[in-house]
Length: 343
Ligand SMILES: [Zn+2]
Image (cartoon, rainbow, N blue to C red; front, side):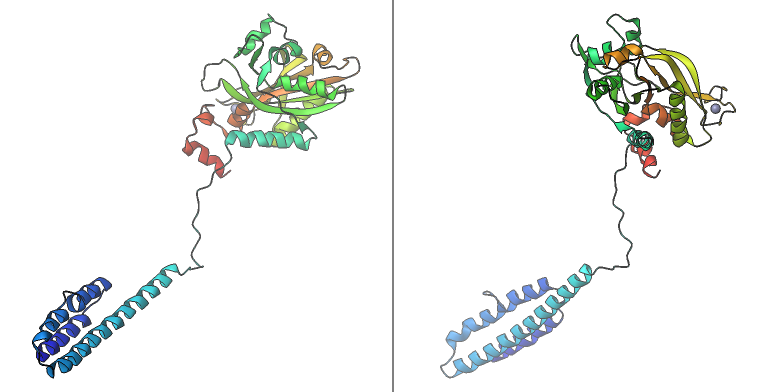
């Protein structure tokens, strides 16, 4: 029995020395020291020993168990130490590594251009006024010199909600609201916002688009003030070389009215396909506020005068970035949008 115990010690220690992972170590612990392990198996024969032999064999058995346990503990500690070291190594931060670039959003090109336009006018001393997108017929049409059945209402095919309520077709109702609020005092505002028209979507039209209008009212406001303001604006948007020209036009809320062209952003005025060889591109509409509109806003047209202008943000963005289709702005194609993140 003593020989069997000694043989077990040799075999166990040999096997333990070759162990190289915790799982294997645990398997050997069970194999030698477990309830059904080799040592227990041998000790079952203790019952057949004499009273003198029993303590001697018991001593040997304890020695063998201690030896095996000792190696197992040693190995276990070694595995633990190795694991800790690995974990520490994995957690080490190399501060010299370049940082990971996180994907970030960017301002939508339309918001970006709207912001630029607003900045130009705020720089010229304008304040920003906003109003509701769902408007009454009165503010959207009537107070802008467009009574019911006026033929010019057809110019702006509208989305009606009820007979008297509609989605605003321009931001001009904000001008009326501002005049009523200012109660005869001088005005210098721009009104940015979304507007809605029953247009079929195509490369240059959308049922919803963004407009920015401007309104200046006060004593002695003249057409030359309007022209100077718009020249300032286009030069800040398109560069100092940009020029404008005014062509007579018609809007019910201004008299006289004009369409404004800017020198072609592509050819600089020499003539190209984009400007159909004219050297000019249409950019916005404007005029002197109609006396009827001033009156309905609570101003006396004999005492004050004013000018107004309105532009589509999409139109300005198309020209500024040389984009050929307004629908790019609404389809949210990342390949299109991400180009503006770097500008
Ligand atoms: Zn051109």
